[in-house]
Length: 180
Image: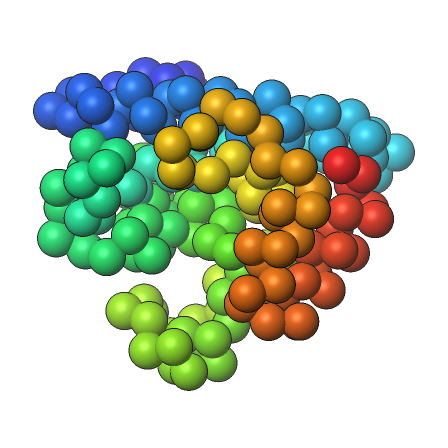
């Protein structure tokens, strides 16, 4: 399986979005592989980490995010579960779960209900080591005007803290486990 070819398949009509997704995915994949190296003693599946990091945002073209070249009809927060649906159709079950579970530090059913997110009501929390690694690495690269610059830990923590102490606690546990 070649993640770049799979992204090309879905982004053929979205060249601006393709450029963004590839650049962002490459940065997240590099970070995820460094993180996986830090916990090599836990035996992460390095090939899977790289593939999943490359594919984690495959669903954004279906969302309304014009700043990213995406003109779909769904809110941006939906890109995770939309990516899951795409990758399930491709027969990539494990990769699909990474897509769905990488939003924030994960979303619970309670988060979805409380915030009235337009998402399926199910827990979308990273479970496996590899899911956690990709989710963690993604937090260091924003989709604002500097997508190729790695954010410092304090800025990542500050951003995550806006969503609650429980979310910051998850990130801090990952920070302790994975290093910066």
